[in-house]
Length: 298
Image (cartoon, rainbow, N blue to C red; front, side):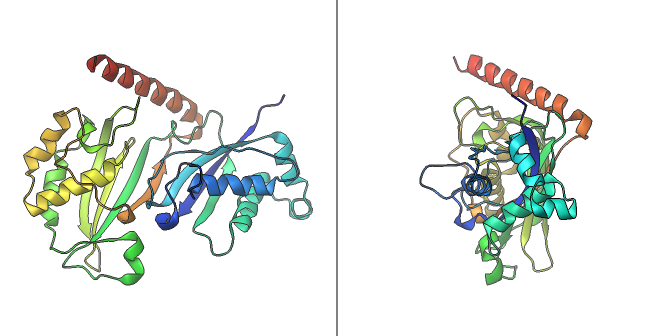
């Protein structure tokens, strides 16, 4: 049997009416909608696709730069390229797959395929990634509260001290155990490298935080946001924010801010020739970290 063909897809979605990325029985999710679209496209020769993704976003979280991969049998690729449209225009399978899926998703859809190409050898959307970048938007007392932006912005009453939050968050950068800021998942490590945690106001006064890390664990970004807001409110000190990195369990001092303010902006990858090595390296590092955590918890 011939090996499947892997495609790399860029995806954007409004997370408002999705129950997160991951497929769940009886719930509308981004993965579920996309896999149904692929099944519809190849309904004459049934296919059971499975999307793997760079960032498994939670319910209500948005994305403009999500990345996933999906494997298709060569017969399905050939079926795409043998259509009348492909024959008359010379368009390739990756472009056809993008356009056909977007057609199935509809002209007023809340999820869209922004790009599609043949994945390089060894590419894995999750494990080949070098880093992920998120943005969180808060409209405080100084900001314009735009009803048209309410689905992607958290409205917050008091004025936030952006300079104080920015200073406090600098002490969290680097390699650390973010267990205090994560919801535990069995077998998952909470060791991450936080590369950026910056703050600014846009032209409308909206407070925008940008966070970048090699990876984020469950609810980590929204918990970090809650901790930073607590510093502005005076409920936590800057020193306490950093000290929580030495605790090995989730902290009750940290609130999780609403999902609607969070958007996955970008996922970065090494050069195509290096994606396989990066995936192997990430898997090995995660396994080593998880084994070390298991040993320390015995």
